[in-house]
Length: 562
Image (tube, rainbow, N blue to C red; front, side, top):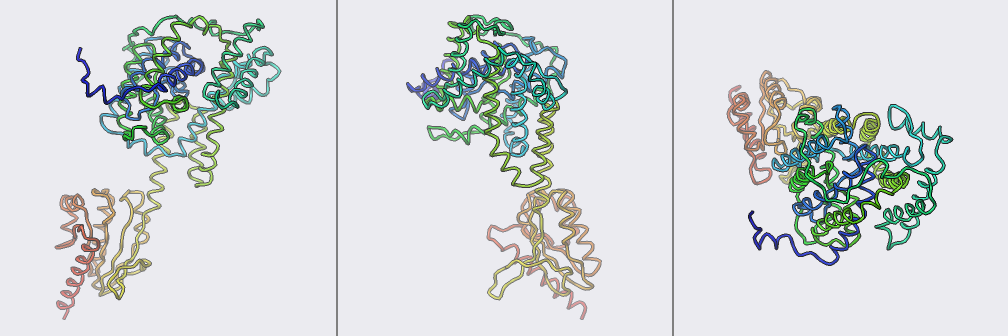
């Protein structure tokens, strides 16, 4: 095996003492959170534990966001369960889980290699707020049965939550009291600044010990899964289900990458190096492919786990590595104790996590509501979709809504503006005339992205052609290098209208690709000689040249008329 060079080792940096302690805190935190997330999605809690071992090590060694911890998140767990259930596959089958993790990792790797990080820019904040809030509600509703002993009924999470409230008399007193005690102990520990980062762990240990001491009769983790005192072992994927899970793997990848994309802005690299969305895509892909072969669920960058690591003193990427190593040692040494954790304790901890997520999203919800009615509608539709549809379909719905929002906003930005020359030779903005003045050169500036949806607005503002010679100079400097075919058709049609009344159109400030496209599509030929003026590095130079051409053409028309 090839040994890493001294240079590559130096590039990882040397671990700090605080990285060791941060890794210990993060590893301990992974026990209740990992088991809880796996449980609410119907997976073996052991898989939730092991999701913080190999993926955390591999992800931390390869991520471009130095402090990002790669592990299981609530949204990924629920989306994974939804994908497997929709495909008719058992979420507790290790081969199915391994295959889903490998496929999700391959999708992430491809997106990183193809540098598709820009795709996440098209998932709007309104959609992500609706999706995240819906996920938080799913988290809470999913554990109400464990927390109170009454499993709510209904076809979606909102209905189930209402059913749970209506049947408060059916809650089991013992389970409910344990869950309430868990939330109370967490609140007390969270109020102590030194205990804030480990408040969940404190609540789990204290209440579990109290249940054991009092002999309270509630369901334990050991009743639903045996936790082996061993390291994660190799698990072969069940390749026969590949075609059933390909689409779902893409959905999981989008959910994971969208969540992780918010980490780098929130947690800058301590060494001053730049993060890379595409580099993080690749790292998460590697973490999924390797982790899935060792009993891990699909994973991604976890903002909550990263926050714990940073709060506990993480300074280098070794903090994430140590979190995985510490977790492995803890599982080896303390697995039998983990089996005695009461399920209502897990339920109470998840209610806390879900409640924090909902409370944390309140400012974002208010911001979206104040921004625009369209954004608010997109947020609401995504939220409802997340509570009523399989999550892989909900994220696709969100992506489509984001694209529609982009198209609508882009079309609204498109406009025409007239440019008038001032006495001192400068150009100033003016209203577009209803009709072009005959015998003169009129300059219009077009701003937009040449999207087909915006062209009807442009055409509505386009001035009428006069009877007699007139020149319209259209400045397209801000138009993308390659305009849409609809844009080309519009320019040809407007040139024909002007030509039929003795005028002409000149396009100024065309980018190089625009010039080439005009030649390939015949637009340049339709506009006539000197009808396309290339962009010049000197601002307004192409505009001045276009106006000069128009004035020379008008002078020639007058001479011909005389």
